[in-house]
Length: 201
Figure (spheres, rainbow, N blue to C red):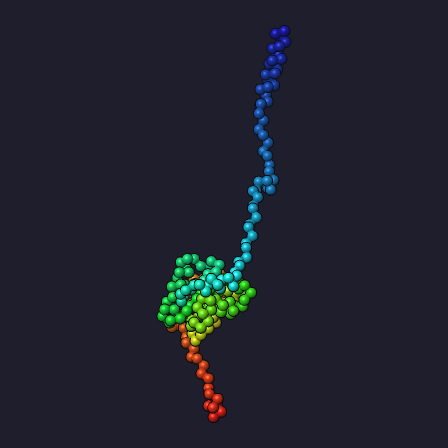
């Protein structure tokens, strides 16, 4: 029995040693869809809103002769403060009211009507001064000058600043758009000619 068992054990040992117990695992090939993490969808950007009637009621409570209203946060705090300082200097030196309004929404108004409503709410319709409206909804910017004060070369200023505004570079644009004190002009009131003088001529 021993003679028969020994050869069998030897054969089993030889065959067992010839094959490793643990074969290397085949690499698992994943598809591209499995290897790339899913990208979450970008959240939808909400359209800017502005209820002008409610806003006008708020503006009527404000005081001061120089106002910066950045309705949708295009200026940094430092930039807004610098604009405020520039406008206040104009207001103090000329005794007028000044305002800068930047908005993305006109709420159904024309730029002219929007600017007039804001100016009237802030200062009153009879106040001398100006309001500069930067209108990002339609791109039609506007100087509102309701009294005898006007600004030199408004059309040229708006044209020169259009490139900076298109790029969102408000500080550079406002260096062009906000006038210096000497660039504020006073338009003399139109005098009515008496009818008798007209007939005499």
